[in-house]
Image (cartoon, rainbow, N blue to C red; front, side, top):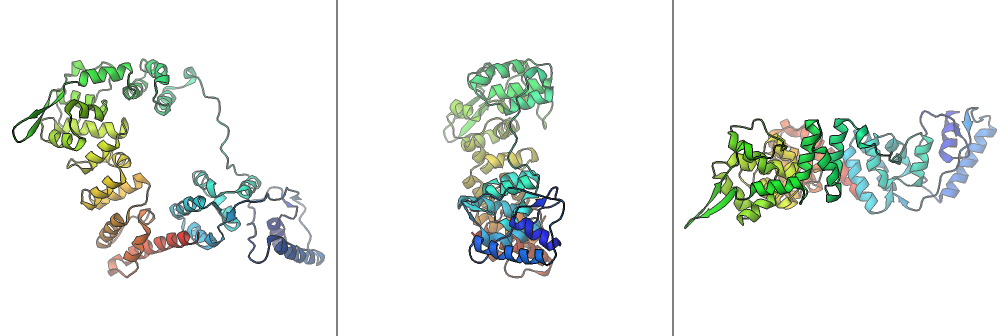
Length: 431
């Protein structure tokens, strides 16, 4: 009886359970045309029915499955099922991105498992979901398409947290200046600070103009016969705009150095290039030799990831000799650096490999073959790793470094790396 119910539902012969706990897998045809295979199976069902098996009483009619115009990635079914059993979500998402580029759909045999994944993962798989996936999701009571956006609440209806979030999410354009200017006078400090940081990023705003006027002349390059020196004139705390967010303490900085740090972190880094006529790398090198090195370097590190996205400065800071391994700067700075700078920094042993792992996670991208080889060698010597992610970020060429047995103390780690990379390779080759 159960076999009859499953086949009847899988073939969509006109009935389904009214409230099924789990809809059985759709059948994947492997021989002949789908129409011919369906007729054969319907004949089998007819024989089973005449032998005494009848549909259940709690079945209700449904519409048939819609047609698909794109091809299924049928060869990917087996490795995808293995990836699902391993909970290798990163490998599945990597496969989905490549399959979508080739206009292939997830095969019916994996659809139900895909639809049971968490909502965020399902959303990422939408490019490989066709009409039948949406139809099946409706039958399973799963929402795939995002709901219509609700009417945005008015400013007066928002709490202070929602107001700060709205400022952070709003486009940093002159059109939104009235919103930001009004928020800069809010009672809550969190809202005022977020509004100030946002206004500092909009050229021509009153805040941005005030900051640039205050920053002029603070850094001067003194050219000597065989060298250059950076002359720094920090502001006093009283010179800073009263609405500027202040840092209570930072390292061993005194009052004036702390005021300089606050000024630098709210100033576009490109401004200092115009002021000094130096490229980012040269300016950072001179700043390291000055009495205000910590204030300047820390201010630029804070400005890049949080306020001003300027890849040239991200690259320069990543390749400089300053300590960029601080947790508060590590991931965000790396996200904005170019691929070339990231690889140069890693291959130049700029970072400890542990930090590179964190950087790679922040980037969410596959590492280059050269960086992958370096990290595999580090893992081999260290004997163990966190099994959460490295195998999914290594380049597929790393399979050759984990194919041969390692020392006994590293063998279990090698086997894990090999299994995941080999699975990714099979998924890649199945398309």
